[in-house]
Image (cartoon, rainbow, N blue to C red; front, side, top):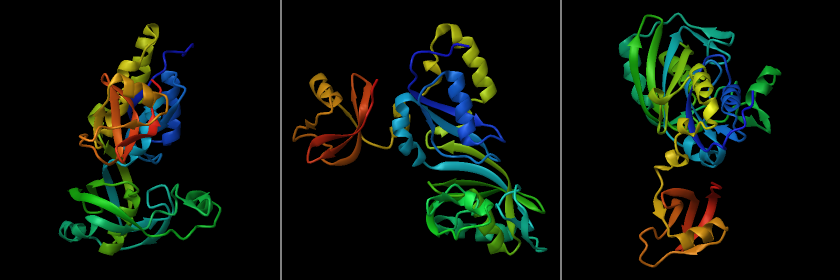
Length: 303
């Protein structure tokens, strides 16, 4: 099948299925769209499903802003055992006969709000001395994982059963839900591990907007004759709502596109800014910083 189409630039919200890694899911979507350049905005484990933002073309230059967005997950913790991977895939390392009540669980939830100290799972993609932690663990050389501070905006109990509880968490970059489950179990004295994990949102990308690989294949088949799938994608600037925007005139736009700097008028309200989305004629030119009234390039979009 010939999949050479007009270059695509923008974001797609994929509903990643269980069993695929984020890289595998990206690869399938990239093949369906015939895209040359692509990346994803935040890894999901193979045993997790849900919102996986995919960037195509020049949108890949905004991935860092997507990964900085708050994320929402729904997850279920099974009580009574801790596993080596902190989910149902790993071997049980220790067990407990204690059964926590809903009251006990809700009472400790405030401890998991705000800036929280967290130790990432040993079986994670974090690099330790240049190697992935999970690779070292599988080789029998489990590394000592450093404590990090993560931001948990909210953690709410959604449903409680005798041996399991379902929660909804809204958290910042670098937070591991498996670690939350492990630490909840240890705090309660009943131990626990994740048996279900689904991501509901990443920044502006919501579950309601997500498309499955099966549906994506159907849409690509219908649009094949049109040689254009741009309508599937959300704009490059979707993840940049959190930074200021600045519109420039044509002479300034040409200078910026040629890699030159632009001096802003003294009256410009954006006197200093680490990141600004610059546009011309409602078209994004790139991400720039303002340093002493001078626009300097961070990322230039080649559209």
